[in-house]
Each structure stands twice: as structure tokens, then as C-alpha cells.
Image 1 (cartoon, rainbow, N blue to C red):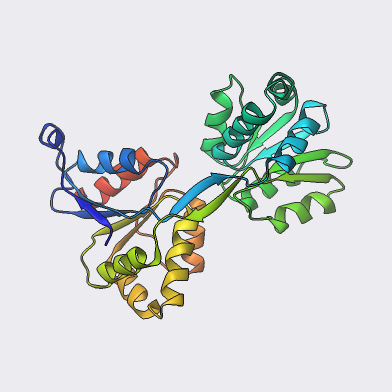
Image 2: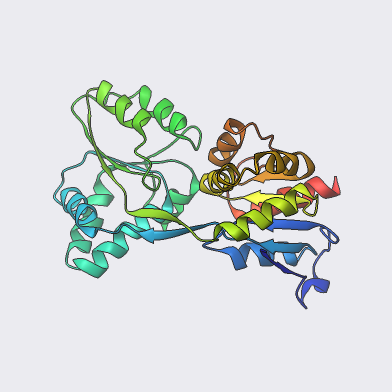
Length: 286
């Protein structure tokens, strides 16, 4: 069963607005940070990491793509995640450190398009900023932002979201007369084994959880896939109906809606953990 924890010893000094509430956290990368934010507000937190992120198993395509960027081979760069940019740089540092300087110089010159706040934050960490921000933090938002621009003849690097090929965006770029150069610098892998996810689904169905807070679309997909493989779709649907559903941002919300799941809570603007926690608190103290 996924691990449960009670509020830590410093919880008493914080506002206990989630006291008596049980919040499930499928986050993996920053699970303790996320859990602590909730625990300081009095919540009982169930940690159930479902997805892990790993470097691309073969660094060669990432390095080849990075060399092209460093050599001035792109006019534009679309960044889907902050994780992706950081993984590209860590790949360079591990396998070809001299490439970093040229990569960053070229990165500063090309037009940078970001989908959401996280890739923008990753750029700021490098002393850079986006030249264009997507109207919405989705593929459709990126396309809408680029649609009014003349892309004919432009060479566009695309940092993918995991290994999802994003045919919709690539097709749009090609139809606009541009050339797309995608790269997948990381992969998603299952973190929790099926037995733990099954136990978690049963907890949802039994009404033991007040809120489940999703921070990535892959968490939703993983939950659905395990339920389907183990004939627990009815139990999961029951769990959805008995539990408040929180989404960190539009991409997660879109995935939930495509699964027929309502969204009860989502930050209005900043799609990070702290605004998500504040949204959950506000929902229960309204």
C-alpha cells in the first residue's frame, strides 16, 4: 500500500487548514517537497509515486541534436518542459562538456518558445528568457501562438514532452513550410509496482482519500492503465466520484477530461506545486 504520513512536528506552527483531510500525492521527482507543503497545512499525505523520469537510454541522438543547435542549425526552439532543457544540458556535461559553451551561446541567439512556466524558469536559471510564451500551456496553445507567424523556411527545434512524438505540432510546423527537428532527452518509467497502484485504487474506491493531486499527465495514464489491466476500471470510476480531483495545470486537466474525469481544483495562472496547494486549501476553506 502507498505510504501514509502524519503532519510533521512543525505543523502546529502553520495554519492547519487541511487538518483531518487526506491528500494523495502521485508526484515522484519532488514528492517530499510537495508532501511537506501539504503536511504543514495539517493534511495527512499518502505518497504513491507512479512515474519516474530517466535520461534517454541512448545519448547519441540528444548530442547530435545539441550539436546542430550549437552550430546555428535552428532558427527557433520550442521547449515543452523545464526538465527537458535540464536533461539536455546534463547529457552534454556528461558526454561532451566542450559542447556546452557553444550550445548556450546559440541558445541565447535563437527565438525561444515556451509552453508554460516551467521551461521559462529553466531558461531563467541560465540567464535567458523566452521570446514567445504559448497562449495556453498545451500543444494547441503553442500552435495558436505560432499560427500568426511566418514560419516558411524556418528550422525549428522541438524538445518533446517525454517520448510523445507530438504529431499534431510536427504536422503543423511542416504544413507551415518549416522543418521540425524533435529531440526526446528523457523517458518516463513506472515507479510504483502494480500492486501498490492497485492498493491505491482500492483506497480511492473506499472513499479513504479526500483529494488526489495530479502533477503530470503520465500519472493519470498510469493509474488508468493499471486499472484496465487488472479489471479495476469500475473501482477507479467509483474512486473518481468519491474523491476531489486536483490538477496542477491545463495539460493534466486535459488528460483527466479525456478520461471522463471532472476537475475540482486547478490554479488559475501559475502551474506549480505551491499554487496547487493553495488552491486545495482555498477549496476546503471556502
